[in-house]
Length: 229
Image (cartoon, rainbow, N blue to C red):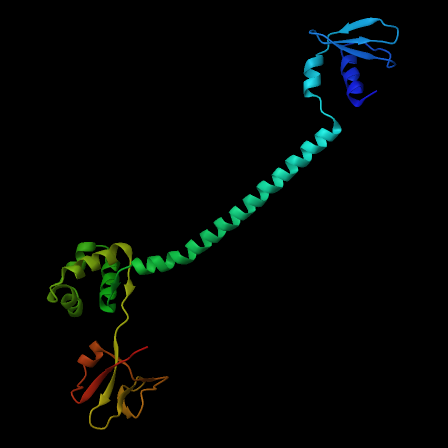
């Protein structure tokens, strides 16, 4: 007796009839299944033969289906894993690039302008219009905004107020005496100047000066040499 016959009989017995298991022949009809036992007696059962046969699968078929589903699952997992890895790499790359893009997009303003923006922000009575109040702003900011007659600077400071900003790195200069060829060095601990044969100043000594610092000094006999990185 085949596996199919054994399972068909078990299902048929659930209909309330138990029959002998020897020399059983199956006959299909439109109502279900007719069992014919060894002495030729026909007994009809209310058993869905066609539906049972259609849905029945052998252990080998179940195992094959199981193996196929497992393989399909593994393929999907592999695709998901690779896709997930690529997404994580993309997100990491975006996260790494975002600060750089933001940094590039932010307006660049001089240090004095940055200080003025922060000063205005601290005063709750001021708003963005307070940035353009030239009666209160420092002279160097006033010159940057208005005396240069440059509308771009007004747009720039308003953007910096709204979006944030980066501070412009000031241009630095060495001061070289035209007569002695020595360099002017400032001792920041005492405020006194010295003359050195080189610009390699460290610690409390300073050899690089901004344009603003130079303008406040008497440097008529000194050549201004731009500091290059």
